[in-house]
Image 1 (tube, helix red, strand yellow):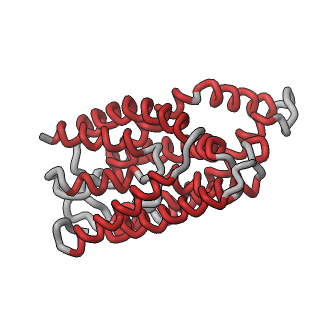
Image 2: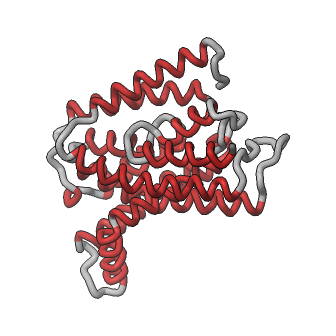
Length: 284
């Protein structure tokens, strides 16, 4: 049964990671209905995100290798520092700093109190509304070549909000990009590239923690792990396969259509979650 639950959660992770609906919220909610004992845990969520992030690496492989290669060449003077790809490398580094700092500072809260479903429901609704406003009022004229250091920092802080389940990493960063006037596809592309260092770093850090110091029942500031290493690995592999298909769909979708279906879905899910919590159907 644990393997089946892990596969289901891996499927949920893969389906929702790249859509602006919060994968961590969905994994958190679905976990309540699977008989896993409730919250699958921040560690399980972070580790399975390695799978979806490897899907990003594969999908953007040519972009990533070009950016890394030209960034390295700029360091040794073989390319000018203002080369577009070398500059993008620096912007990804700068944009990754906020989530690294905030993730370390608030690690205990992220893994415990911020996983309350009351908070998740609120974030789904609030950031759903913000996404809808940004998609409506955003100029959608700026491209990635127009990205500035200041914009990169704003993107970075928007991404760091995704440490709270319900915000959505892609949703938060895309919303910030739209408010700053970037095209939908450009906002999403930078959001996905920006997520690579943070998600892989967080995931592998949680792998290390689960080996060095596993969470046990009764530990203060730590939720016990629901799934073992093998189940988590299976979920991660499933998330990779599903995520690869979803990212291709999403990039094609947003080049032609608005984010309004996702806005409506987020608000509806948040309201349903409020009702389930208020009626004690599920525990916060």
